[in-house]
Amino acid sequence: MLRFGARTAKLLEISYQGSDFSRRRRASFDALRPKPGDAIADIGCGNGMLTLELSRTIGDGGQVYGVDPSEDMRLAAKNRCEDFTNVEILDGTATDLPLETGSIDNAVSLQVFEYLDDLPAAVSEAARILKPGGRLVVGDMHWDTIAWFSDHPERMRKVLDAWDHHLVERCIPAVLPPVLRGAGFQVEEIIPIPFSDAELRPDGLSNMMIHLIKPFVVKKGLISENEASDWADEQTELAEAGRFFFSITHFVIMARKH
Image (cartoon, rainbow, N blue to C red; front, side, top):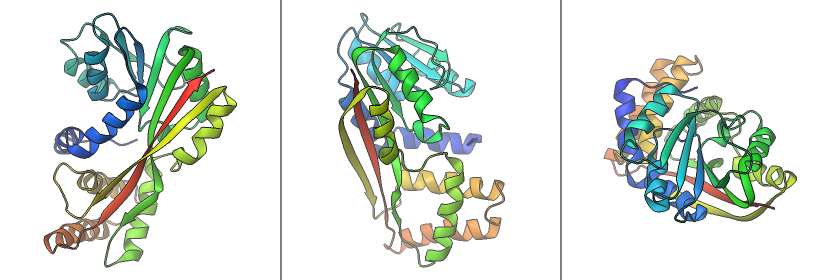
């Protein structure tokens, strides 16, 4: 599990409000197609940014249930959504949702499923809470799509291999659709959302990843502190020289319960 200090938490807050993360949230929002009066589950709501955006659309006649197992994230989400009476933040996980069977019109989960060790259980739980015809939208990276330039490709590969230890499944867009179909969902569309940077932007996905990867791989004992620092420093130097390049593709999976 990733844990953040105050400085990293501030960087994450900046990144989450930046253009890359806004695009990801918007892609999930658009795929969900929320309507006034909807009951929506935001599974793994984190700090509540998508929860808040959904609450504005569904109005007072609807309800958004933000579910997250992290007390810190739930507190952040409650603070963010405190002015909206149509939001309820709940303690729960993707495989144990504190919601009644057949009570939800649509459900969304953004960058959560890659951390789950039981995808069939999470899909079954989503199916349980959804009404017939309800939509489930899952957004996750496909980590095989990452392209990150370095003058030291072997070190880059070593760092990215070490970073894989922060998740359970690195290829959710490829492995989730058959699980959904097996649970009685119709997979309607899989939408790629590509991200590509030739600059190291302060609010960008690549900058946030550098600040997350470096301490994670060192703390796990997978990469030495000196090697991780050299890796991170090189990215700054490449950016200053106009040679930075980073690309990865996020996917939004749209499925409907039969």
